[in-house]
Amino acid sequence: MNFVPEEGKHLHEDCSTLILPALSIGNVGQLATDLLISSMGSERVGYLDDPYVLPCIAYESPSNALTIIQQRSPVIKGMMLDFAKNLADFIAGSGKKHIIVLSSLDFGKWQKVDMSSANSNGSDENCEQLGWKKLQEYDPSQKHWKYLSNLAEGNATREDIIPVEDELEEENYYASLPFAALFSFLKAKGLKVTCLLCYCSEGDNISDAFQLADAACKLLRLSHPTSGIEGGKWRVPLSWMSVYGPPPDVSIF
Image 1: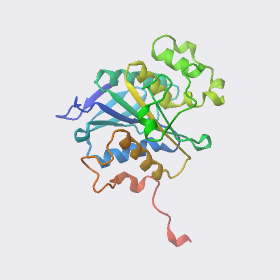
Image 2: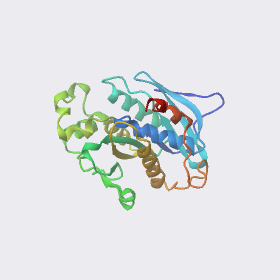
Image 3: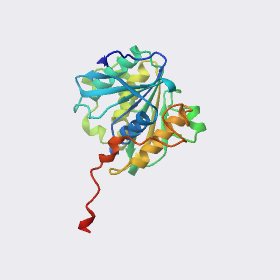
Image 4: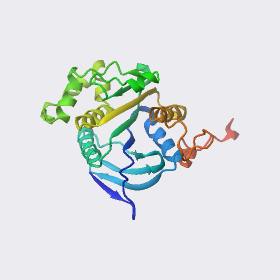
């Protein structure tokens, strides 16, 4: 993975916290990332080039000490683990200290959760103080989570991969999602990783995006960012005007 900077720009060392989405149902992580980019006076500083996904755009908000990566397209099928490894290598090499992954889960498995590398069992005192539960299904000793950890630490190979039919089992649902691969590979680099997860369904999930973006700000104590959010109001991205297509023609009713 290579970082290609915009002309005259570079990544700032002071922006030690990184926020990025993990693509999943409803695209809530991406929408929340849109909202953070738009509301925090972020500027585009370059893009990440990787063989397993279309370029991911990198933004920075120096006033909030944040770097934000936006990923629009899904990773090539079967290459999520390779992408996670490449991204973790890049992030570790760029000096980031805290990584926040924004993602969504199937509403049919509802509970309000987060997971963090702060403790070995996935709990985080800061998240608990905000009233967020740990992902109960995160069990480092469970087969699929253990495989991800061993692979990220170099103690397993792709030849040891778990059969596809096993991924369909209920206990393996969470560990088979993109956020789990990112969490495992980033954690293996010794980085602090926090995954903020919300449950949703397919459809218009803009309201969920507001909640997830607000959760990221609360975690970072940026409820009132120093740039971009006036009077506590979010700045809605222009791209959202057509995110779900134009409104219906009222003449048909």
